[in-house]
Image (cartoon, rainbow over all chains, first blue to last red; front, side):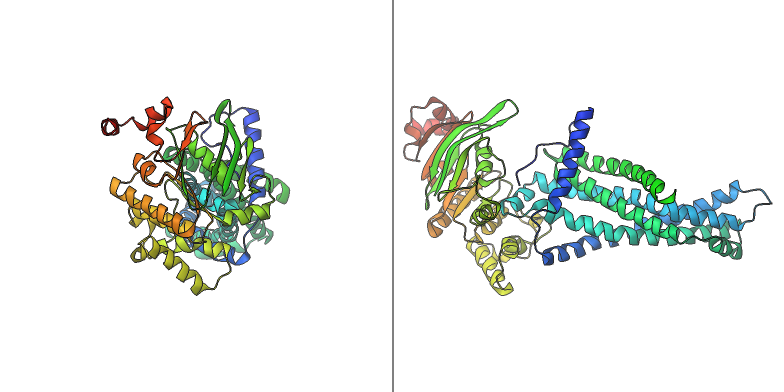
Length: 261
Length: 248
C-alpha cells in the first residue's frame, strides 16, 4: 500500500542492484493478486484493454507479418538456387520459420514496442500525476486494479494477433513468391502441406502467452514505479521496450530448449 | 478528530519529519504551513497512509491508522477524502465518472442513487454543466473543484487538501478556499490543508501549524499568526514586500 522507493531512472548496474530489481519485480507480481477487487470490475476493464491492445494493434501486426512472410519467401528462393532442391521447400521453410519463430517472436517484439511503451507511459503518467495515489487512498489495490486487466488482456490478445500474423505471413509469402515468379501457387500449397507438425502451432501459442505475460508485467513494472517527471516517464517507456525485448529473446531460447528438444 | 503523535520520517540520511505532534478538530479547517521542502507533504502522506512513518501514531477518532488491521484500515480510508495538488483526476474518465468512481468501487448503492449522489456533489461545487467533459477539457480551477466533489462524494469525516491553491489565479484560489471552508462547516468534517498561500492562512485557518526543517515550530490561528515571535515564521509570512508594507 505504501509507495515504493524510486527504482526507474537509476543508473546503478551492479549485481546487487540488478538482483534487488528482480526481487522487486517478483514482489510486484505478487501484489497484482493480493486484495483484488470484485470480478465484475475486472471484466469491464479487461474488455476495454482487449480492445486497446488487440484491436489497436491489428494494423501494425498485419503489415509487419505480411512483409516478413514476403521477404522470407523471396530470400529463401534466392538462397535455394540448386535445381535438385524442389521449390515447394521454399513454402515449407516459410511455413516453419513463420510458425515456430517469426510470427510469435517478431510479433511480440513489435507489440513490446507498441503495447509495452503504452502501458509504461500510461502508468508512469498516472504515477507522477498522483492518480495512483488517489486509488491507494481510496483503499483500492492500484497495481491489481490497473495492471491485472492489462496482463490478462495481453495474454488473451497476443495469441490471437500471432495467429493472424502467422496467417498473413504465409499469405504474404505466397503473394510475393507467385508475383516474383520464384514459386508456383501449386508448389507453394504443396510445400505448406508437406511434413506438417501440428505441435508447431501449440508451441507458438505457448511461447506467445509467455511473451505476453513478460511484456505486460515488465512494462507495467517500469511504469508503475516511475518517480520524477516527464523525463522519467519517457525513460521508463524506453526501458519497458528494451527490457521486454531482452526478456522475449531469453524466454524464446529457454522455451525452445524446453519444448522442442 | 485526528491526532498525530511524534511522527518521524527519514529518507536515507535526511530526516524530513522530526517528531511532529498535533491535533485536528472536527468542523475546523486546520492548516499546515511552511516553506518548500519542510516536510508538509510528507506529513500529509504519512497521515493518509501513502508513506509509512518510521515512528509515531496517526489516530482517527482514537483508531491508530498505522497499526489497525487491513479491514479496519479500509474502513478509515472510506472516511477520508483527499484533494491532491494536481487534482489527480483520472484522464480516461469524464468529470461525472471521476466523481462517481469512489461510489462505484466502494459502495453497493443502486445505479440511480450513485448517479444522483455524483450529480449532487458536482452541483455542490458548481460544475453540473461540466459533467460530460473530460479532465483535459476543463481549467485548473475546475479540476480542483471536481477533485473536491470526488473527495466528498462518500460523505467523508476527514478531508485532506494538498496545496489546493497551487497554480490558480487569486480569485479562483479564494473561491476554492471558500468552498473548502463551507464544506467543512456544512458536514462538520475534520479538514487538514497543506498550503503556503497567505490568503488561505488569513481566511480559512481555524488552526495553523508551522513546520520548519521537519519540526513544528509554532501553532496558533489566523488571528495570532502575525503576532508570533518565532523568527522563522515571521520570515516566512513576511517574505512578501506587500505583506510587510501592510503590516507597517
